[in-house]
Image 1 (cartoon, rainbow, N blue to C red):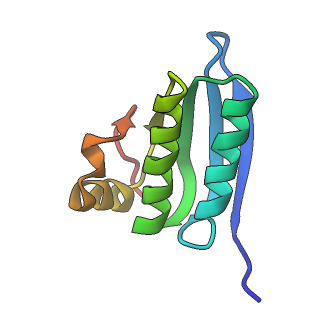
Image 2 (image 1 turned 45 degrees about the vertical axis):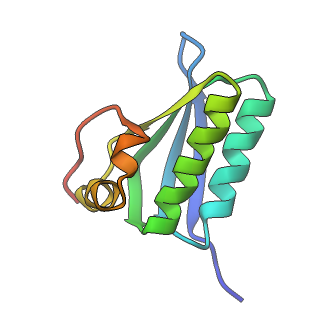
Length: 112
């Protein structure tokens, strides 16, 4: 049995943007959770989502690909996903995988 170490807190900005604050590890095990959370937000009528990575303690390429897939889902619904406060490691992975061209990074990376 594996344990998924990722939690999400949801808030709404006055402009209607949904902010999904992730806390924990964004990796292959937690990636399906992210896809579900974005799907639920889109089904609830959200179009613009911000995924705040400030409290993500570890990230791998599978976790970032889940964000890219979620972004594609949002685009199909007429919305978008922006990343906020990714770690330097996350930014490095975004650059190495080319996902920096698909995902909008809203603010510069944070130091661990």
